[in-house]
Image: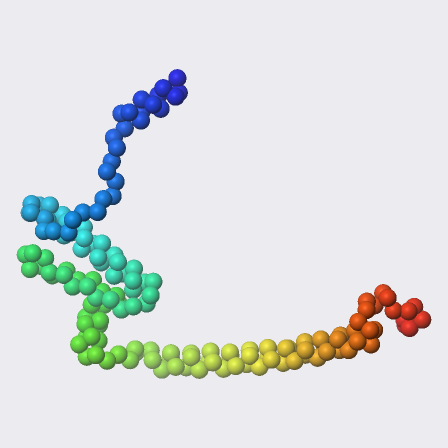
Length: 152
């Protein structure tokens, strides 16, 4: 009985066309054109915001509708991105001195960590040489193969 219900549901279920690629051309019906503009505008803004979030890029998107209405989206701000573009120079952030200070502190910490790591590496290499020389004294064999007379 269960198999019969499944078969009946499959027969009555609509089959969708799914997500299809549409031809890029002007939408003739005005109401459809408004809906298409709204959906595509939001998708474009989402993509620009996503690009900014994922890559740290500064983005600005400016769109004029068919009725000359302005829509804009920008990360961090449309005005900042446009000013930077028009001036063709990078603005120095307000917190630039603190950024330099943090960078210098990080570099010093990294150098100190590197020096400590080198010191530990040298110690490990010394221990490895000692173990290697002990193995050479043993003839390269295992410690349990040594004569019992030499053990302390």
